[in-house]
Length: 162
Length: 162
Image 1: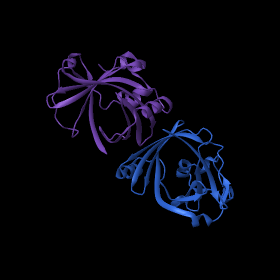
Image 2: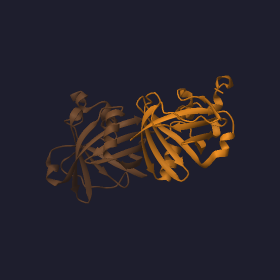
Image 3: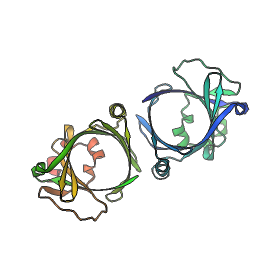
Image 4: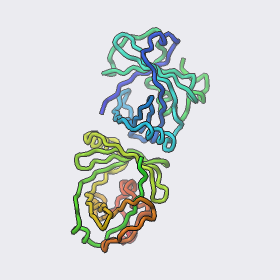
C-alpha cells in the first residue's frame, strides 16, 4: 500500500510541451465509489491496472494498485464500469528535480488539461514552472471519478477555473 | 476472466465430515456492490485476493480474481469494507468426480453451513451425497455479499430454510 500525495493544477499555456519526456494513452473507468473507497480500472498502453483508493484525507489517500491482464481491464471497462470511460494522454515532463504528469483529456472531457505532481509530504517544496496555472487539488469537480460522471464539456463555461 | 457456475445447498447432517480433504480459514469483506459488479477482498490462510464479480446471470457470473499481498488484503478489510467481515472455515470434500466446498460460517453467521459445487455448465449432472439438503442457489439471502449485510443470526428462525 502506498500513500499518495498529489497536488493538481490547471495549465496556463503550452510551453510545457518543450520538456516532454514521454507520453502514454490512458483509458480509465470506475467500478464503484463508496464513502470509503473508489475502485478504478485503467488501461495504460498495453498494461492493465486495478486500483483501490481510500477516501481522500486532505490531499493524502491510501492507494492499493495491482497489475492485471490488459484484456481483462478492457473487458471490465466495457461491461462493469458505473460511469463513462475517461480518455486522456498523459505526458511526463521534468521540471527541476520533480516529474510532472500532464493529462490532456479527450472525448467528453476534451479541453481540459491538468498537471499533477506527486510529493512526499503535503507541504514539500517544489519549483513552479511558468506554465503552471491555478491549483485545483481541493476542487472535487476535477477528481477523475467525478469527471467520469460529470465531464468537463458539460460544465457551464463561467464555472471553469482559468 | 473465468465464468463461474456454482450451485449452493444447505447441509442436512454432519456426515460430510468423514470425507474432508483439507480446510482453510477465510475472511472476506466487500469494498463495494453496484448494479453491475461486486468487489470482494479475501484472506485465505496466508493468501490475499481481490475479486471483481459481474452481476449474476442466473447462476453464471463473470469473475476476475487477482492475488494480492495478504497484509494489504487485511488492511483493506479493516479500513475500506462497506459491510461486516464474513468469517468461515472452508472444507474441501470429494464426492465421486466432483469436489464440494463446505463453508462453516462463524461470527454473526454462525449456525449456517453451505455446500457449493462448481460446474462446467448450468445443467451439468453430479452425484448428490446423502448429506445434501435444500438448494439455495437462487435465494439472494444466502449470497455472501448479503450475508455480510444481513447475517444469518439476525434472520427470523421461521424464515430459515431447512
